[in-house]
Image (cartoon, rainbow, N blue to C red; front, side, top):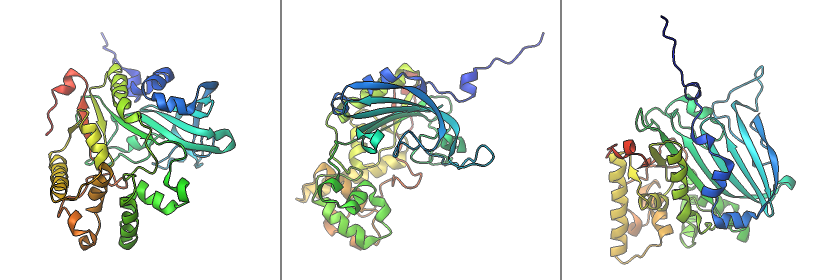
Length: 349
């Protein structure tokens, strides 16, 4: 008798569990009360759209085509796999929830996006890592960065299910450029590593950023309750969908400290050692009489990548360690948190 193949068709085609969380779950678990208050009550719900274009519903709502697929006879502007877009008009802005086969993300806008007057204030996402280390990872149209490097972005374990979290949240009207129109300083604070090829400009902008209250990667004032509430929300969603591991690729020192303080572990022993070097170096600076704010701690870590190194102020030079993630290349500082029994049995460092 013929033994026909038994297929888990959704799994074989790459349909992840995480993209199947409901919009209600996203609103409840990921959109914090203060963020909900800023957006205001939901006043209109548009029918979900199945979309296949890089262009979104309005300027700023675009997606990506990192693998540069050409569809429909070679036309540009389309993505390989369609994505769903749900639009919730709120009293003060809008919430857009997008999902494709491997990712779900919630995007909060303050202002009237339909009249091109919206400001991005919030983004939270969960992404299945099953295709990381291959080109297929970049077929996700909801990516900000590629994940195809087979060494730098290989999944942690061949059988354990892993999900990456990401979050962005700033108060409306609080961006650096809102205060005095200084777009260049805002760009530096947002992406300081992109200025390393201009050392003199980097130093000048660093001196200004050092005196402020913005950490690297933080061009606006954080929404207060996001850091307190969102990690448990991510965990509840991922755990409910059967994932073993939650992962984060923290951009800067203060972000890494945040997730480590919430139970995340290092995936790589060398990165663990590097982080320890930064921690010890920052403690030595403090012990020598130079107190540092949490924002300044992160700026010290960024500063170590500056070349030539003699441009680094002597009292801030840690003499060696380089922060493992630059948010330009595919180098990521991968941290993970076990959320299943199988995940808790994993030992990496």
